Image (cartoon, rainbow, N blue to C red; front, side, top):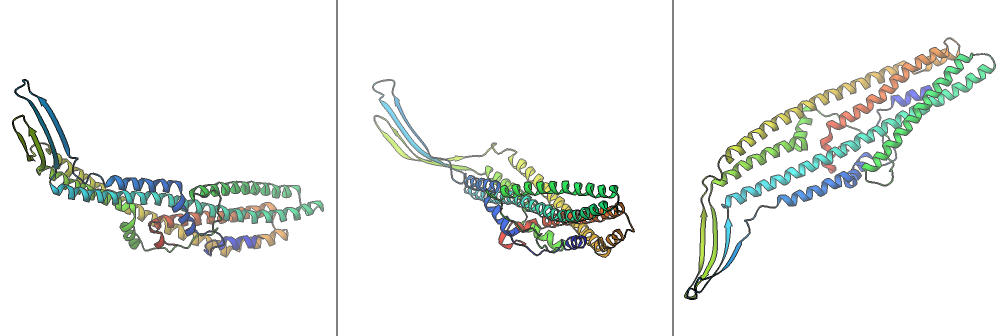
Length: 399
């Protein structure tokens, strides 16, 4: 039994998928049905519509008047007019560019929100896989303890062992039973969270093996993330919008126009014809260009700071991932060379060591095996976070 458990632990890094919904299928379901992503998608559509406003001139102005004279001879005066105001054409072109950039910003913010949900779903699935693996290992250990308890109970009845050794087995069995209960509770809670994140009323069977990830070259990784990751693109787009706003503000120094048609009817005559006007900018745009330029400068500095921080964090995450990979290989090698519990089992069966000594060895072995499970989970999460940009374009994802 112990040998089987050791073999199970040593093969944890194998990534052959078992029956059940694959990680790719699960993430596709989350992307399509997750309540938060559905809300983000509706918000994106609202922001797209909002960004298409402000591209046309102001509404036409229509007026009419009736002005009675103060004497009968003066008669009544009637007036009406229709006029339309226009800004300088350059302003509409620049405003359209800003609106298009605003749509790009909204799309990247949607991608970031969607990406965060997909990453949370991915991490939740990894935690479920980890807890299921740990539960399987615990069940194997419990089966071994049950066999040991039965054998020691018979030995106790024949006087071949002591009650203290037998009670030690019972205590260890009780402790592992409690740990199994905790793991089962954790598994059920994670399944419920997966059900919610996938937008499903029922839990769908998910693969119980980690996916296969290829460790990327760091320079290539940063290059790819810089091109498509929303966290890198959003500061760039925000800076672009600020620069476009500077150019738009400069159009405030250009004249505006007004054209119309006006009529004035008097008792003895009528006057009707076109009218035109010109807005002369004198002080309305005062200091606005300087303010917009200062905001653009701040956006540039913020963009550089954010991107530098993202690259630094990625470098740190990459080093952590490599360290986890090395630790997994070292512990796995030690466990493989140690032979599991083969020799202590022989010593216990021959009476060379006591049950207490045997359990002391098992405690060290099981701690190493449990740590290997934890490291594997941490490694999978670390590598998945480094490759999170591949979740953005689903057909070209890493799965």
